[in-house]
Length: 527
View 1: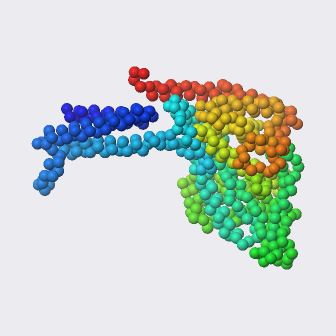
View 2: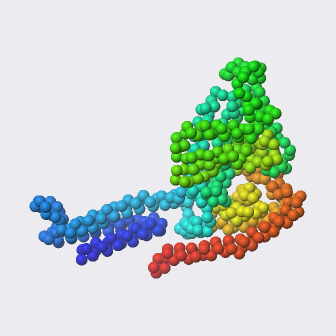
View 3: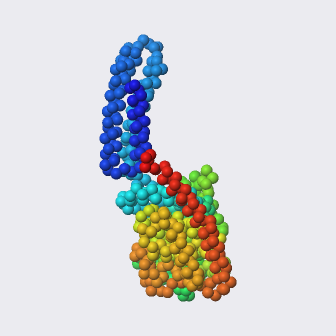
């Protein structure tokens, strides 16, 4: 009888454990469960004492343990089983109580934070959510995880590896170049979709782009000479003139300006064409440094590094671990515009017809800061990135490039209240993106995000003329090319049809199934 009660108490304890794990009771219910837990412990203690007292003449545990047994006598199997069972029950209850007390206060903050780059969840905003809101988020989580192939965890882990390796490589190079007259290498900045967390590519095909800011060496200065107007896409081009500065009387004894007899290597001779910084020559020089510096790193024992010849204006590298894991990174070069977040940079894929002394205006750093800022404000993690990933994935292979969709998305993201970026709002936000894109397509006008935009977060530092300049038009080519415009309209209609007939119904159908299953599992008997 006592054993039966003991098993019944154990079953009740497991039920109580299940309730605590799967539900989040209110304060009164929580206190009642704690009181019941104490009562069960006391009752179980009494039952164990009773079982020991009744059975002591035959197989009492304590006397048998204390009794001096003849050498070689073995405890009976029944005694061992009972002792192990009681010890196991006590240990199980102790572990459950400890685990529950540790887990429950942290239940709302247990999700993984997804931007080492600062893409994180604001946990304080979750404290006031009702049970229904919690279950809605769980449901949306499951829908996204199953409906959207989003290799975010692999991308995050790889970008951490990439950033760490590049930081160590650059530290090594700076030590090698110290006290020299070569350009100063600053800290690399992870940019683009791989570091922002929404890449439309599969994890194994993502190229991790890093911008390497350059500063002129001692005795030199960079003079930026912008070309053309703001109406160019992606922005103004620029040439970077390298000029000599007087260093007479400075810390460096050499002055190339007033003492031309100095024979130290000069940036003008090695890295320039007609006094303008040549990105192709710069890339060749940097690749040579990388090959020599890599073998001195401890990481070279774990990764096989190969500098690829595919890019003439950047340093494209392939890393392969001993386990066979391979990933790509591309180091771009950039010269900062004043103290702003705008750079003149070497494009990832330079046009062969463009002179290598031409640098393109880049907004990659500003875009990265924008996504970091948004991640700190949205209340439900990174659903906005999942939505952007889905939009760019659907439009992959069309005339609407990821940069175009990203621009549309940033406009929508910047004008929609942050509370509207919950998991369950994805379809509405997708509708907003499609509506914005359709309007821009009809008007043949898609404004670049950072120009003439008073809503750009203040944390993003822009050159003074940006806020008052007319934004460049990313759809300018559609104004002049009617055939391209007709094709863009046709592809947009196909995307709309695909969304209406397959993608959205599929998500809604799965959402309905998930919700039905979830409600069925959570419904208590008798409800």
